[in-house]
Image (cartoon, rainbow, N blue to C red; front, top):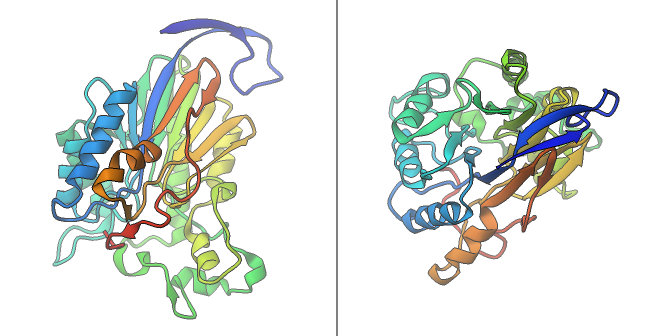
Length: 326
């Protein structure tokens, strides 16, 4: 459905009024499935697929962390693929962990292998290029972290964040991400890609949806005033990424994962949200309700973004957990 709105152009408040023809869109989004390497999670994947089909979205977004094994990722995407929707994917840090037993490394997975997996399963791999549909563009990267989310009052040396270890607490990318960039270099590279994608969009694009795994806004991060939780919060994202999004008035929505506590905020006129499922698994009887909480429905009507029934918080609280490093 297309509606012509006589309104202020998106987030801009200082420009003259213009008439925009903006299509109404529906998005289904989820992240952080952490699929087990056997068929144990097939029921979960089938329920997610069914829920997405019920929503009947124009776009189905997965914001990373399905599996560190490319074969498991491919099988999962194949089961999740939504007919009648444009399927979009960005990887998470777990997805780019190097393959064990001499397999592909992080950079090869991010730059080549995962894009090929998406092509075979009918997903558009946003790190390769944006997806443009009429007046709306989806852009995306994995995002990364530069320790700008750290709590400086904890007094932890910056070298400990760079080394991803402090007093026995370890951020596991230390052992499984093998590209040669520092975290700050990686953040800057992905930020440059965001700017390039935005600058490359045609003038006909009046709305931009940004998809990433890592968080672009510190306000989406949860702090608990305890160690090691707040040490690990430094690895959630980068404030510099959010600044880029806020400076581009056409960005109206940001979808991320990574933090396993679901949240949504409004900042400078845009909506930012996290859509994780997490490590928890309910009983078979509770699977349908669990998945309904996990798959976010997003509606864009002209310039407005609505999140009907969006569930915030940790939807895995009180559930049994699967192996965390998958």
